[in-house]
Length: 352
Length: 263
Ligand SMILES: Nc1ncnc2c1ncn2[C@@H]1O[C@H](COP(=O)(O)OP(=O)(O)O)[C@@H](O)[C@H]1O
Ligand SMILES: [Mg+2]
Image (cartoon, rainbow over all chains, first blue to last red; front, side):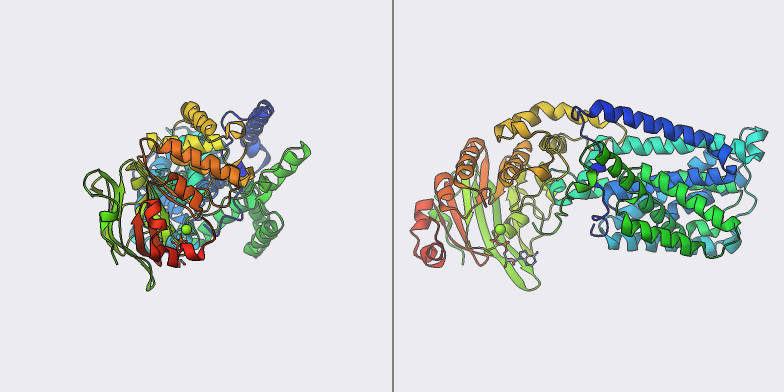
């Protein structure tokens, strides 16, 4: 876990049930935040070109999925493109060949991602830290190789072309990106709600414990590997849901979706936004997708250089990402103790 | 270098709760634990003593699955648990504390205990339910906090507790598992006299109806609590018997107590 402990945001772990006297104010703050987030999601295609709004929503769910794993279980996957991209192909193929309505195609993709994640999870959760990242990357590269070779099915380097949008014959949704956004948004929000449910469940509590002190969690009778495998599969399913929606909204599946750069990008988004909060990934997606869109439409070539520099600057200057930094500043203004000052628990796997 | 068991008393007359046979652990050629036989009788308090580096913590790690033995077997109430994982051994009714306090710094003492109680009761995999389910353990959690003297600190993050309070929480976590066999690694390490006495009293209370193995350097603690003592030296069993027997054992005096100023 050595790679993540520094950026872990301990205080954002599930709030103590019951809480103190400040609870009422904080709960109201949460509801306001949630309402603001919903309003933003609803007005987004009015203020931004609808296809870009759809990209933001899909990448936001992808980042939330990664944060579940990175922020709450302390596992850095560098192979999440396998689940996003794997699902993108399955969603694209089922829409193309079977004519599945897009929500079902995306769900089929998510199901495939979870099936794929299960053996990968079993084989990789034995490792943590940088080794976990390497093992997940290796599996994702295997999938990339298969997709690239299997031209007959996937179109190889040309990608899968001509993916149709089916939505029960509703022409507005099937042809207009603006209406498609509103048809797809419930799936995205459902995915985000599910991530929230997981974080604030008995399972989520144990997960944070296995992140902060796995040796002690085991002493309390918890099979740490089982928890890690399950969160890996859940994370992959949500990443798959996002990837499926993304593919259908674009009308084709690019080989890029299973490439390592995609795994890197979602890590970048999530860390930039701030891990261990779920909200951070959403902020990161908004910032990076809009930035990339602006740069691309101005004809700029070196997008990677700019986003990479922003990433490095934020990580160096604001350890806890945009969301973590802002919420700490607000907490300080209210005179509360910012979460960042809570000491991170030692990784007890060594040094018994 | 296996001493006969008869210093302890006739084996077989009482049930053995925890037993090791020929237990060894090698770290890259270095043998930290060498061919150790250990029998802990049900209901007794058993002290494991020896100088730093003798292999006491390594032995605990072997007994609780944190390390896999190079050779040898471990049984709990006659059941072979060799090679089992720590969480499986916890479910076999063997709980341990850690020499170096090992807590969740961001969780409160109450949350620690709710987590521990859920660990034994099950239900931790329920990702579709609300975490308010953990509150069902609150009553028992608060009882345990009261028992170890942390009642007033139930909602303070563990990272902010004083050293002695962390040790008390460490103890409460072991108790929360309601184990048949408790392994305590230096429960009084670094404590002042008052805390030491309180810990002795606590161990004495919880030892009723349980089997306890503990490591301690403080001979006052060993003398007050232990029914039997095993002396470990360079990974080997040097002597075993009652506190009085061991204390007067020439080899022990020469090898261990002689160089130690406690007692
Ligand atoms: N994981 C490990 N790797 C290598 N050597 C170890 C390891 N754990 C313990 N040791 C060594 O084994 C010996 C016994 O250590 P330990 O069991 O901690 O002693 P004690 O608890 O009796 O003070 C020491 O020499 C220690 O350095
Ligand atoms: Mg030790």
